Structure formats: structure tokens, C-alpha cells
Length: 132
Ligand SMILES: Cc1cc2nc3c(=O)[nH]c(=O)nc-3n(C[C@H](O)[C@H](O)[C@H](O)COP(=O)(O)O)c2cc1C
Image 1 (tube, rainbow, N blue to C red):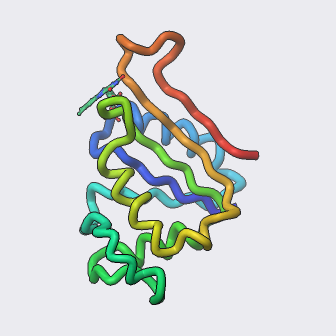
Image 2 (cartoon, rainbow, N blue to C red):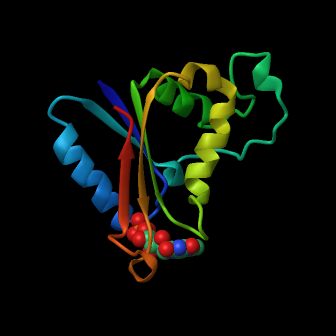
């Protein structure tokens, strides 16, 4: 299975530690690629809607090559630190940009790594979810 991990953290921190644990367990039988939004040049979605009647996003940046990788995967793993009770801007940026290829992502397996700070986590501070 081809797995794409979207790393919503810019740090070599807790989210990356959880991603590496996932890779350790999953790399033997799967092909894994990590997308690092923080290292890419991707403009935020402007909601222009042009992508709904053309082949992709109109932005001539890293958007379309990145969404190509996501569309080619069997499973998408969304990984994010909790920022203000939500996902990081880096992860949201990529999810918004998937609007141009939404139907192609419809039946994929998905997973999530959600990392919060220790003080507010009642039982553990990393949540890992996935669809079978
Ligand atoms: C801008 C910002 C907002 C944050 N908001 C929350 C929050 O709402 N709840 C929480 O539990 N932790 C919050 N944190 C803490 C991070 O989720 C936590 O430190 C996480 O482990 C960082 O992951 P990383 O090491 O991969 O960067 C916030 C951190 C930052 C920088």
C-alpha cells in the first residue's frame, strides 16, 4: 500500500516522533512518503472555484505536484500538533488545497496523528487513529 504522511509540524518534535514510530511499524510492507508543507511553496486556497471546472489548482506553485502525490496514495495519514484546539495552519493549508481533487480522495484510507501538550492531556498526549 502506498501511504502519504502529511506532517503538519515544522519542528523536529513530538509529531515527528509519532510519525517515525508509525513508519517503523508500517515501512516493511508499505511504500511511505512524507509531505512537509512547511518546506513547500503553497499559497492558501482562495476559494476561486476554478479548479472545479479545470484539471487542478490555478496556483503555479507546489500545489498540484503535492496533490498529485496525495491522489496517488492508498492511504493518507494526517499528522498535526494541536494549535489552539485545532490543526496546525500547515496541515489545514494542504487539506484546503485538496478541494481541487476532492472526488479522487473520496475512498482512500485515512489516519491521523494528533499531538497536544502534556499538561492538558488526560491520558497520554498523542492520539493515533486510522481506518482499516
Ligand atoms: C501556536 C500553538 C498553539 C498551541 N495550542 C495548543 C492547544 O490548544 N492545546 C494543546 O494541548 N496544546 C497546544 N499547543 C502545544 C502543542 O500542541 C504541543 O507542544 C505539541 O506537542 C507540539 O508538537 P511538535 O513537537 O510536533 O511541534 C500549542 C502550541 C503552539 C505553538
